[in-house]
Length: 206
Image (cartoon, rainbow, N blue to C red; front, top):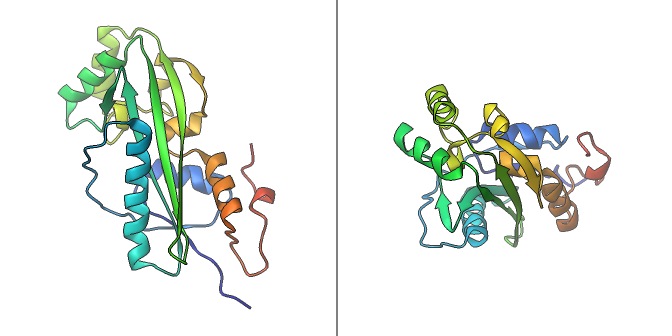
């Protein structure tokens, strides 16, 4: 009997862990800890580049495992918004996103034990209503913006600012497009055990 295939999530994000776990997929966590600086300005290419960088870094130290990397990028009017460095930058990001339609792109990369990789992404267009100055101040004071691309967390209180999502799912905005990941695993031949358990039959289908 062949050994059990292991999936490794190359991310420290608790949001990605919750989303992947909620999909009924067994995995381990091994954060990549890579340099996320890049000269790429296209949001899709940037998200996919960083996802690939994370997955390949972990795969180098775990070559027998399947490794999943992910990275989320926010883009509004051609400006890329990363994770705010402090309260002042979080405030500026929220002011920029107020009354906007912006894109949230999550790149995902799956590196197989044979060293080959598949990289793709999902894009969600997020419509935000105008956000009043006192709402911005209250949100900044809450600290929810910390470690969040674009300075907001839709799965927490920032959902009150969002009026519509288009083209991609809520989970993509949180940080991991679950259905896309499931398809990627299935189409790449990942099987969590020697008998080839069908991922599509597990819990968490939407």
